[in-house]
Length: 246
Ligand code: 4GX
Image (tube, rainbow, N blue to C red; front, side, top):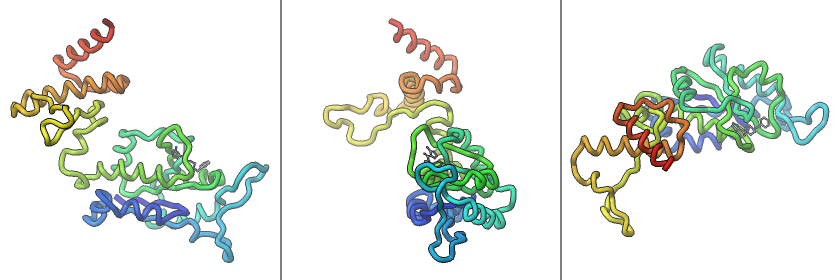
């Protein structure tokens, strides 16, 4: 998997992706993250400006179409004309685990990060295939959203995580995770649940599933409609709902 991030702040991208799991995956050759500096495609030989005032007036500056489109076309020449180009924007479709799974099947992905007050609409029209938001709040630039997406997609690439880790977690089965404990058995008067010390594997698994269902019911009930529950688990959920009504 090859990620390309078109940005005015390439160092910001490089420092984040060189660490931890993404850094290790790059060393293993499982993926690559390349930050491409849009400023290198400026038409302004003197000052390398890439922004200008908006037509019609208004606050702030806009990124000009020309350097953005040149930068994007340069990368598309390497990756192929069919490569998806993702523009990070609060106006986009909200990113979720399903979108991460779909995008993890691509060979190459290009992320376009806007700064200032945004990008000349013609660059978006000419280059962008997908407009995506990471949530309903306003950030100062698209770099952090692009990094969030790269992180979520990378962990789904085979070999990046330990076998099985990606499929067992929150959202994969539409259930939140169960609580976890490590040593000591008692901390500040709080004990590890007795069942986890019992060594009875089957009972531990049952307890964990119940905890997942309880947590999801309490914190994210809207997820439950997408969860696959056994007859016994459905009975447990019905019990939780009944207790709430009492
Ligand atoms: N999920 N932003 C893009 C630049 C910008 C300014 C104005 C268009 C118009 C965001 C988000 C996000 C802030 C990224 C504005 N673009 N991106 N940036 N939430 O807030 O993805």
